[in-house]
Image (cartoon, rainbow, N blue to C red; front, side):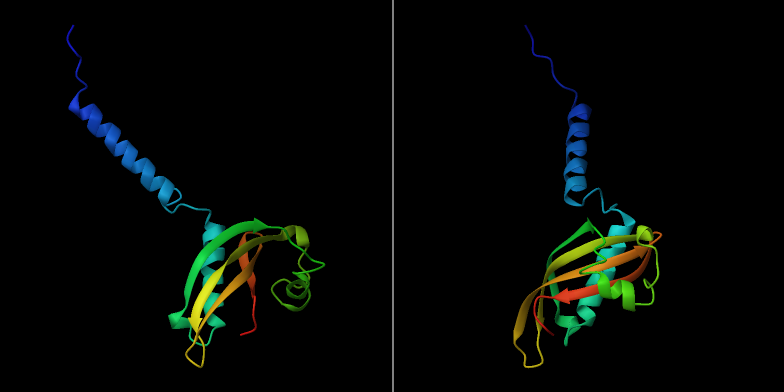
Length: 139
């Protein structure tokens, strides 16, 4: 009984498919994430850096984006009642992305802070309208 050999091209195809699968998993589908999620994360990262004394030195880590619930009676009260882009907008038209992580940045005195943050990105009818950045400590 002779052993049947697998064609070399079949092994090469299997190897290529394996590599593509690993890359897809590592990049969350080659970076093809939900565009609103990507937009929320980009805007929140920019806004977090904008609230720091030295934004150029800021390193954001453990950044996660999750679809959130609108909380008009608590955490979203002020953006909904005082911020013009959201003021008076029907709540059913608003989608919220919750972006969280940790920022490491230099302070005015040169020391380094390590501070968790939460950013709420508000979309009205699919368009980014406003963000709210909250740090664990005052900056």
